[in-house]
Image (cartoon, rainbow, N blue to C red; front, side):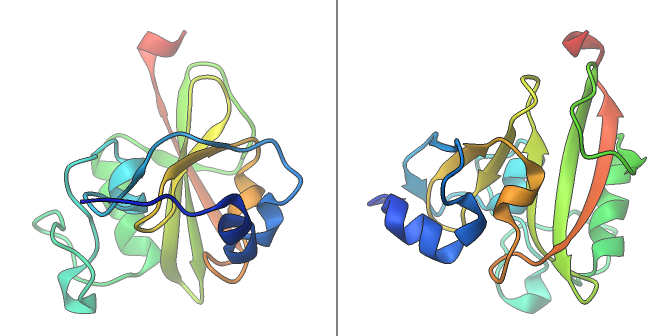
Length: 154
């Protein structure tokens, strides 16, 4: 389902760290997928543990919980490993898991250009310059970064 896009004022009210930065809207609003799915490159299904009541898809074989450790395990199966560097590294795709109290709230992925891509709930996708630009009350302050080698990005 396509919705009317959130206004820039609405986006910045929900995520104040974006105000005054060079972010861009990249899609129309849609409920077809969410931030977790988008971080995996899936724009057909929302991903979230079903026991939390939000999701329609969760990979089989993983705990139905919203712990950062569970989400990191899913990323590991997809070729990612832990990384302590938030900066752009040529040849690597990175994902950021945003959390509070050990529970994930959001995920973003770094593009080949070095910019980050986030899906804002049921709203539009955005690109933002820094991983920290979507921290705050909505998505948490803790950022866990993972990366995988992309031979096609070198």
